[in-house]
Amino acid sequence: MELVRATEDFVIAGQPHPGFPILLWNSMESCAPANQFFRHYLLRAAIGSKRSWPSTGRALYDFFSFLEAHDIGWVDVERGEAKSLVAAYRDYCLTTCKLAPNSTRQRLTYICKFYEYALKQGWVKRLPFAYEERIVRSQETFLEHVGSSGGKTMANDVMPRSYKALPKFLSMHEIKSLLAAAENPHHRMMIRLALHSGLRREELAAFPLAYVFDPDKVQGTERNLRICLDPFDGSGMVTKGSKPRTIYLSRTFMAELYRYVMKVRGERVSPSKPPQKALFLNQFGEPYAEDGKSLNRIINETGKRVGIRVHTHILRHTYATHTLVSLQRNPANGLNPLVFLQRQLGHSSIQSTMVYLHLINEMADEAVLAYDEELNSLAGTA
Image (cartoon, rainbow, N blue to C red; front, side, top):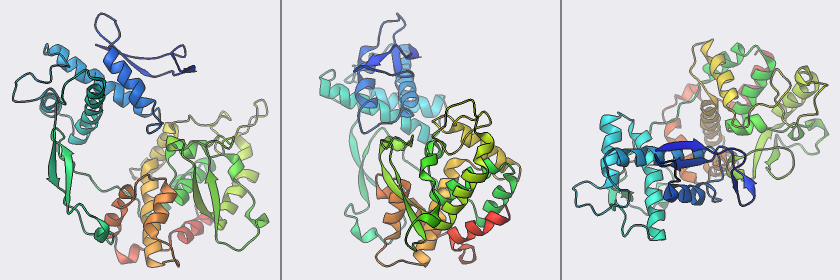
C-alpha cells in the first residue's frame, strides 16, 4: 500500500485539494473504496477541517496494509474467525505496535466509519463489529438531573474503553511566570489573548487586526465587549468548521490590544509588503501559518524557560477553568456559566464543556480569583 498526498492539480467539484489523502495498492492503482470514502467523509460539512485529513488517511492506510500483510480481503467480514477484521487490527495496534488506547480508538473510529459507508454502498453485507451497552461511570454534576441515559451508553464492541484524563491548566502563579518569561512583546500579547479568550491555535494565528478597536470610542459602560468571529466577513478570521461565533473580551483588555496595535505591532509591519489582515505577524512581517503550529512552538519554548510544560491548548484549558470558577463564584443574573463557556469556546456539544466541572472541584479555595481582573493587573508587571 502507498499513501500519498494530492498536489494542487487534484481537483474535486472544481476546487483544488492539495494535501488530500489518496490510497494506492502496491500496483499503484487507486484503492477505489478507500478513496471514495475519503471524498464522502472528509469533504462533508460536518468535518470542515483539513486537520482531519492526515489522521484519516493514515488510519485507512495502516488498516489496509495490515490486511494485505496477512492476506485478508477487506470485504471478508464473514470469515468465520472468532475475531472480526477490525478486532484483529485493534489487538495488533495495542499488543504488537504498543499504541496507546486513545490512539487506537482514533484509528478504529475512522475504520468503522469506512465500514458503515461500505454497508450503505452495498460493498459488504454486514458490519465487522456490533454495539453493546456499557456502564458510564462519571462524577455527579449539577446537570446530572437532566440526563436520561441512566449511566449507560451504546458503544462499539471493538473499541477499547476510553479513559479520559482531565485537561491540564495553569495556576495563576504559573501564568505570572509564563508572562514574565515572554520577553518578546508580540509573543506576550499572543499568550495574553489566548488566556483572555480561550481561542484555538488556528484562531489565534488568524485573529484579524480589524477586530481590534479603541474601546473608549464605544458607547456604553459594559465591562465586556462582543466580538463576532466570522470566517465569511472578509477579515481573514478562521474558526473550527468555519462556524461563526460571538465571544466576549473585557474592555480593559481590548484597550491593551489597541495599545499593542498602535505602538508595538508596527515593528513587524514590512513597508515592502501589502497590508496583512492578521493581528500577529512573524519576524518577516507575515502572518503565522494557518494551522497555528508555529504559535505552539513559541508558547512551548517560552514555558521551557521557567520549567512549565505548556502549549496553546493548555492556555485554552486555563481560560476555561478559571473563567468557569469565577462565574460560579460570582454568578450574573440569568447567566448559565456552562452555556456561556460553551459558546465562548465554540463547543458543538455542552458535554465537551462539562469536563471543566471536574477540574474546578479539585481547585483549592485560595486559588480561586477573579480571573480577568488578575490577568489585567499583570499588564504592568509582565
